[in-house]
Amino acid sequence: MAEPQVLKGLQEELTCSVCLDIYRNPVSLSCGHSFCEECIQGVLRSQHCPRDLFRCPLCSAQEAPPAKLQPNIQLRSVVQKFLDTSEQSVALELKREAECEEKGESSGPRDEEILCDFCLEKPQPAVKTCMNCETSLCQAHLGRHSAKAFLTSHVLVEPCDARVLAERRCSQHGKLLECYCVTDLVCVCLLCCATSSHRSHKIISVEEAFGHGQNDFPKTLQTLKNHEAAVSESLKNLLTQQEKIKALERFHRNHLENFFNMIREQLDRRKVEILGAISDIEKEQLSQIQSQIKEHEEMKDAASRDVRELEALRDQKDPVLFIKGLAAIQARKTEQVPNEDGVELAELLTVMDQSIRETVQELFQPFVQFILAKQPSMESSPAHQHLTFESCEASGLHVDDKVLRVVELPYPFSVPHEMQFWVYSTKGFWNGWHFWEVITRDSSYWKVGVSDRTNFLCYLEMSWCHLRVFLDKRQIKQRSLNTAIRMVRVELDCKRQTVSFLDVSGKDWGSSRSYTPIATVNIPASYPVYAAFSISHGSLSLP
Image (cartoon, rainbow, N blue to C red):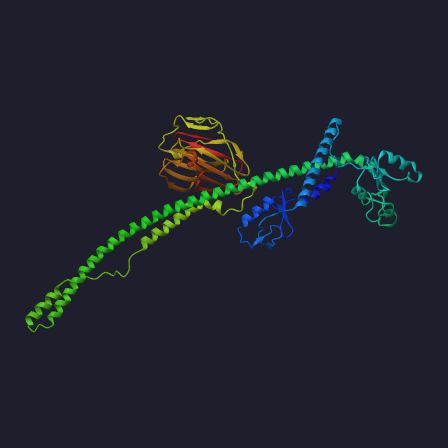
């Protein structure tokens, strides 16, 4: 019976290069190559060539298309015998598998099985490998090997292949690795110990090194596990920092995009306002100039008329008429012509200069803190603080953890600036960057800010539609609003010693997060800093 490898090689020789299958009715071309009859007919139809330009699919040799394909009788016979042999091989293999299943054995050879090198007809599995002879022995041949006195000193190990045998020999001398160099931590042969650089090193036997290794194994394993755990923890921290960096980048990108969008919107709005003011001044000055132009045109007409009359009087020969005409012209009152060499643009330039100055101060100052700040670090991302109100005994106030409400005015509302009571947060801040948000839509007069409760007080005040910023009793900024602010965000940066106020009214309506900077104030370095609140109407609440 043919061996499987022989059948596989023969199958490759009997494969059609067109359909990649065993020849079916093989035919031959004049170049000597053979194909399935059906395959070569398909090639002839696909080429659509004249009769003298047909090419062999395998070697591209040109030849005239054959009038009739000639069968390859001998090749057909070989193919048939191959198919018969293959069927017998398959049947025999199936029979062997069935017998193995009945005996409870595996039909396939074991990949790691080492066979005896001395068995001739049917090799038996090896039970030992002799390192000196470099041969593997079954149980029967092992008995014969051990019975010879001059072979009793040979080293016998578990069955292994040639690769393992090579690893157990010295690469320099080809001898067995019977010793272990403690100094260099390598296995060596006897010649290495006697002649090479290991002569002065500490040498022990491989068996002794094996015993030491067995004793050290648990400790070494635990050390590696601890190292693996430390690396895993470090990797986890790095991944966490990576996510923090990404989150920080998204935060600052969104923050700056919102800021620049607000700058653009406010610049466009202020541009319209300034251009409108310039147009109004232009109209007013043009109106004044038009009236002066009209007066000057009338004066010019009168002067031109006098000149014409006077020139006509030059030819008058009658003394009486000449004197009377000249006296009449001289008697006419000539007004002094005003000096209008240039148009007064001082007012226009003043308006433009003042408007630009106010634009820079009001629009760009709140952004200086964020745009010109140093590059953000991992600690520069503000932490959102969910604050609660501290208990307060002030008359007319109701205070719980999240709501500060006026139930009775403690003094006439006509003097709101004299409010003396403040409610502080229960939490104070010593360092870091923090922010909190306050819902202000239910009050038309409120104060929100920060204080150390003794040395300074910085706050944003809303009085109906007037917005003011104070540091202690000094007003820093003031402007009017068309609509009330519905939510305020306070950002406290203890490192830079600043507090920023932002309008986040859009967030209260469920829209995308949008901030409008109001002001950024430098505060004294006095800690701890608490959030401070005050109202004289309605209520304030913490989300």
